[in-house]
Image 1 (cartoon, rainbow, N blue to C red):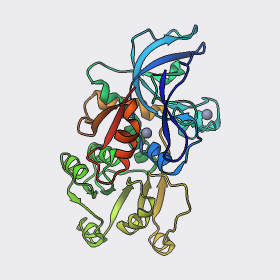
Image 2 (cartoon, rainbow, N blue to C red):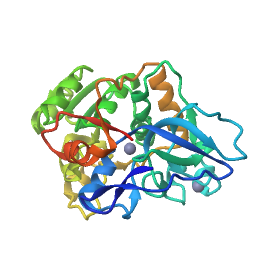
Image 3 (cartoon, rainbow, N blue to C red):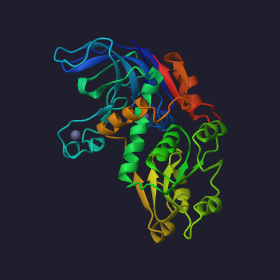
Length: 337
Ligand SMILES: [Zn+2]
Ligand SMILES: [Zn+2]
């Protein structure tokens, strides 16, 4: 079968590899679409992942074959794939924090992922998808689930003032979900005009093309300036210092993007203003299930966010290179193997 093999920094090659054979408790899924994620882009730019892996963890597909013990699925079932490789037994899995499972693996970096024609997965990693939504909407549960985890671990409160830095896929879904969660005032900052246009479809209270500190801090129009929550979704973690400055005293910076290097933080502001920086890693299986519900019930709209579908052969130029171009007109790019 055809697959896109990640061979390290800025190197992805289309290869022909054997089609996987599902184990007894596994299902072989024919991939319909797999989304290119911000973490995949980071790996592409920096060489973060182990090489010789097939990336891709935002997957919708169809059951093609199944192992002898699989009872739940039949050929042709349309499924979304929960990509976490979780043990179900460790301390974290037992207390409902399976995003922190000791296995620390996921399809696309611990096991071959969806930039290939087929993947093999445990049967209980699959979720049925209602046919009321199109295939392309079945790839965004990963990002919405991250939003759900982020709001939970940061003790988000309704009626608050929130600032979203970056309107790529993550920032867009934060904007949509913060509205549902009852945020009072939402400011978005995004320098790419195409992405800002899409954000404007969901009515933020203020949309800026760059961080204008005074404007953002005063926008709350209250005796103390600054935001209660700042969601750092740019993929440029050096912006964490801007985020610290934007937050009010005692406010929370929610850190989504990853960065595999030491980072300078202005400790004075951070400590004096008692800012909390809350990291968010992935999401739990429960978050994934709840994210599916939000899309199926049309509470979240992926339509303007999934901007392009490309073939596997075009994954480098039309996919990764396009997505890392600051002038890109795209937000979420899907690969159709
Ligand atoms: Zn992802
Ligand atoms: Zn575990």
